[in-house]
Length: 92
Image 1 (cartoon, rainbow, N blue to C red):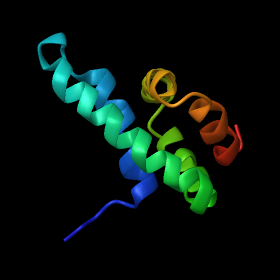
Image 2: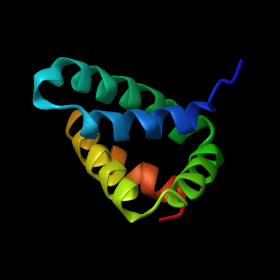
Image 3: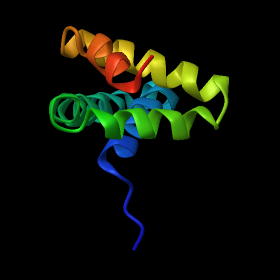
Image 4: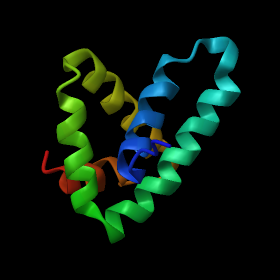
């Protein structure tokens, strides 16, 4: 069984939330909530994991990273300052 690292899973949830059509707004909201909860723990406990996951996802290209950043902005609306803390942990 392949299980993603928690940091990759959280960043993936940010991406998926941005890709869902408007008809699935409830699912997108759930994706953001899961990402926020996980990222808040990772920022405090395992910031290096966020940096590794961020670097790995950068290889997917600028369009994907733009959507992840947009998702992080939406997550920041739920948890003020999360964008800044995740960016710092990612070294960005």
